[in-house]
Length: 203
Image 1: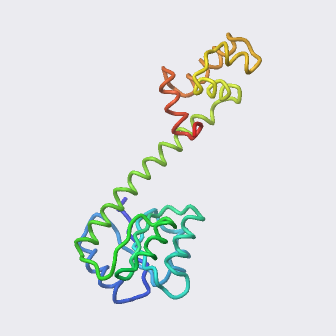
Image 2: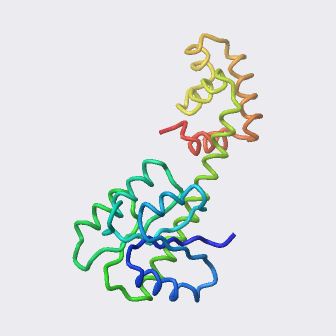
Image 3: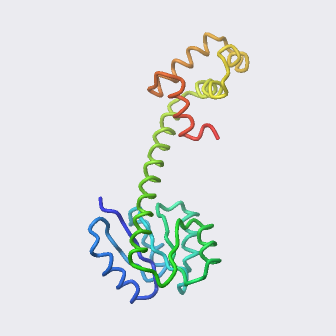
């Protein structure tokens, strides 16, 4: 599946020039929107991708778009475009979730380098999300008592201490431990702990 890049800018000339510039790149697909409202309305039908987002638009501003993306946990990373020297607005955009910004007028090489960095990060984020989801799915297979035992193991407690705290026998702790290792498809405690950390069981 090709990478997705979305241009959100109310300036038609800017959108057309960007579309022409980026059309030479065959490794991603580009789609443009004339307003933040139009982009947000289209998000249910759009794949995850990078947004090249103008901050100053009529209607919903770029900052509002960033807020909506964060609030609704939409699968986009945003590079914002701001006027030269307007660092205060760029900082506010970063606080709302933008991963980078470009100052107008920008050099086309800088633009492409920024987009490539954004896609690299999106790829890493996607892999991380898949790893977390897989770990959470594995943890969800455990019975409540098995999770209790796993918490004890995470804390570095020996079977006897875990047994005392859970009011069960050390032998029962061993049984739960064997069951959870089997359900997690691991052979060692460190491997089980890696899954627990990935799943967010440990903060």
